[in-house]
Image (cartoon, rainbow, N blue to C red):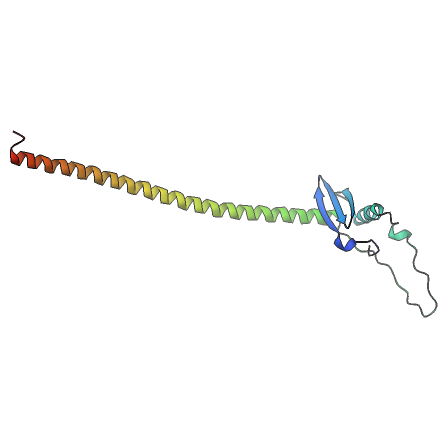
Length: 150
């Protein structure tokens, strides 16, 4: 399809179950199960070019002329586009799973730190409580020694 203007910028996408082809100012869409020939026909129809089979070969310019053969450019078929899409989706799923696992590990570590903090706070509360008991016992001892308890 070298004769198609702007074909070097051809991009393929998958939208609503159809393959969407875009290049230059043109666009075409084909069924997801379209063959390479169906895709080429859709491209040529979009820009009003006849199929390659209908384009006449250049007439020979004499015995010294070099014979050339027009080879149509292969456009990736629907199955390859579907496979590419599956690979992209699978790669995205793997990346999401990896990121999720990393975030979950970070959250688990954060929760473990919080638990350690709460446990330390519990030990501190126990210490303050026991020191309060010790303080009351000390005060009680002084008051007993001074005769206030009698």
